[in-house]
Structures are given as C-alpha cells and as structure tokens.
Length: 290
Image (cartoon, rainbow, N blue to C red; front, side, top):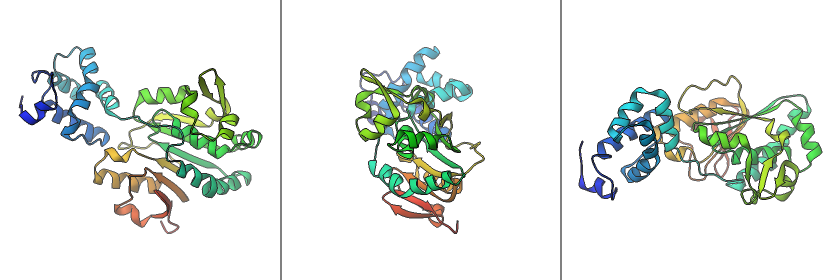
C-alpha cells in the first residue's frame, strides 16, 4: 500500500494499514465509473467515515479487502455507492424554480389536462422526496378541490434516485413540521396532514408519484418523454464530460418544448446548447427545432 505524508495528514488517528491513498483512489475510481461521482483527495475523510461502517459489517479487516469485495460483489458495491452519495435537500429549495413553474409552465400543463391530454414530470435525483413533493404541491395548487380534479386526469410524476435509503424516506412521505416551513402555507394546508410535530404528505398527492431506483449514468427504461424535468444539485458531483452527456440525454427526454430545471451552480454546456433555450436562471426550454 502506498503511503504519502500529505494524504496521511488528512486522516488523523487512522492507521495507514487500514485505509490509505491506494484504497481511496480505488474507491474514487469505482464511484466515478459507477455513478459519475468525482472524489478529489480532499474527500478522503468523508470516504472513510461513510464507508467504515460497511467495511466493519462486511467482515473485512481493511479497506483494501473491502475494495476487493465491492469489485466482485454488485450488491455490496451498490451499498457503497449509496453511502457515498450526498442527499442534502429541503422543501422549496431554490424557490424561484417553483415560482417559474407555477407562473409559466403550470398554466400550459393545466390546459392540456383539461383538454384530455397527458402530463408527465420527472424529479431526477429526488433524494428523500422534498423536491418531488414541492413540485407536486405546486402543480396541484392551493385549491384542494381543483387539485383533486386535476389528480384524476392523466397526470404522473416519476421520482428517481440512486440512493435506496433516501428513496425509503421519500416513499414514507413523513417529515418534521419544521421541514415544511419553506412551503407556502396554502399548499401545506391543502396537501399535508399534521400530527403533532410530524407532517405527512396527503395520500392523494402520493398517488401521483412513482419512486424508482435509477442510476442516471445507466440505462433509462422510460419509454415516455417528459414535459418537465427537475435535476438540481446532482451534477455538481460530476466531471464536465459526464455533465454534458447527461444534460444532452435530458434534452432528448423532453417532450415538445418541455422545461429543464437544474441547480443554481450548474450550467448547460456542450451538445445540449443546440437543443435548449435559456428561459431564466438555470431554467431551459427544449428548442422547437430540436
């Protein structure tokens, strides 16, 4: 095992015989290949802290042994990738996106539903569900009766993530009351049920969403195109070629002049520039000529 002093200095108290630079680099390569995640050496302690419990429960004495395990064991490799993903999110994050959706995109979608058409939305990298439920509440709106009428039409939302533990929480749709504070009160009143300090998403809203485990770098089984795709603060963990490939795939999955929302620090570059038209801060519409 190669030991270098700068790397060892990042890991105070950790024996180099248990975890060293070669282990980190091997794990970093696996994370990049499997999920596009870029792990610079400054993330060495993060990798150790997130994977050490898995190393212990796997029965491996060292990270080197665990690397061998995850190279051969698909299920264990998926556990490791899930542990390395960052699932920080919150309700109504980057609220200007929901404002844009409400004011600009939603009226078009409602007209289509009223005319008997279908509407499909995708929350890609949905984590523990806060983005998905924020989008669903905004779509149905503050009038519960009108929203219930919409929910009976041909309307579906796909929510996907690679991290199964985050999806478990998303499916449960149960959060602390404080978590919901960023959501406008009329939407909370219409689409959540409070029980003490806990809030649950209303069952009528939950019925619209299908949660699925999906690696964005892998095959996409969906056969439909989407009117709206939210993929925010996911690509910040990818290198530029991976981002450009992913955004181009999203552009190809947009129906008509569908809308793509990305994170505030993310940008569209590469081939997708020919297919996407900027509509606002980190909001893009599929070009009519695409």
